[in-house]
Image 1 (cartoon, helix red, strand yellow):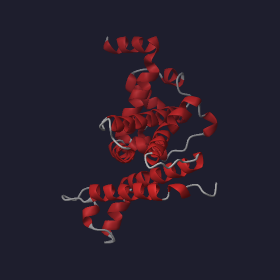
Image 2 (image 1 turned 135 degrees about the vertical axis):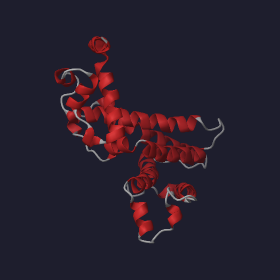
Image 3 (image 1 turned 180 degrees about the vertical axis):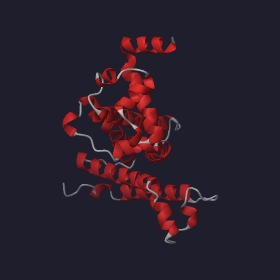
Amino acid sequence: MADKAQKNTYHHGNLREALLCSAMQTLETGGLEKLSLRGLAKSLGVTPTAVYGHFADKADLLMALHTEGFKRLRETMTDSLLALPEDAKGEAKVRALGLSYLQFAEQHPHLFDAMFFWTPDFSRVTAEQVEAGVGSEQLLRDTLIEMLLESRVELSQAQAAVASFSAWALVHGISTLLRTGCIEGAIHCENWPESFSPQHPHSHLPAVISQLLDIQIAGIKACATQLGRDD
């Protein structure tokens, strides 16, 4: 009786939402390899035909998850700004955005992989997906501009893009090194201290990341007038 009621509910228009929710759970727990349209149909007790009515193929489903992932990343980053005091300066905001990006990557590793290590077919990208995809980067760029304006430095569009690229590259690089085990590899080869490992009982990694953010912010502030100078 419950399954029948569930199917009837889906017929009223929320099957797509239910499919996305189930797909996200599958992705977060098992990764891309565990995701399939037929598997989703089975998990929700609907026919494959009903699923294909919302997603033409797996790539179509991945595009929807890709979009949802970037929306969630933007929300996570926005929440980090809202948690700051009202009088927080631009530098504190940039730092909060960087830390929230790292937190998102750590808490949602498989979603992070789907967002950044799966390449969509750009001919199928919609305006909604474009808006979601650029949202977090635009938030970072606007905050960097705000930080530099506090020092009376105005950036051109090209300079702001380079500043954003630089800041994004740092936190994304750290996230990727952690995600792929490269940091543990460097430690194993005795190139880096064991305390760099997040698994170390007295890990220095948070302090190292804070120092890297210090260097990044100081570098952008010091070199702001040189950003994009050849553009």
